Length: 242
Image (tube, rainbow, N blue to C red):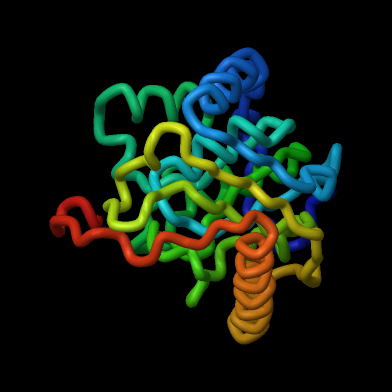
């Protein structure tokens, strides 16, 4: 288990994220996904077998999170926009599997503390640096993944998701049955582990580094799989874009 560095937000009062639901459900979910789509998984050996790790992935469609959780061999916990928890079966499932709701439009201390707790417990945390589903080319990145790695010392593994939305679909649709979808893990890298205060300029510098690494990895994954990204999603309503 990683230690607690000065300036780490206090997480001792938070309950550990339970992994049992994942361990019970993951094989069945993975099998179901492979029945519906042609799922390719590449270089999962890059994900450390133990210890904390941040999976930083591009974001194309609604299938991204469930697919990555199903094929990653270690239980993983993702930062998920809080709007997904607004009632219904999806919100119940996200809560049941310990996923972390986050307010994307403001600093969210509770989500940050829960994410750090996952990493302090040697867990796997999934972060979508782009923040929204889009083209998946990683033209921009938010600083959350780098900040969490700086706090905890967790390595960052870039992940490219290819084929998880068809061209012309909106961001809430899934690819057609039988489509090829690929998860391509990349070589892990680290950022400096720093105590508080963590200079904003340094966080921004390493966030741009992460963006470049992930964007290049996505390009390489397209060449490797023979698939291309689907382009911009079909325009949706204002409510759907939130």
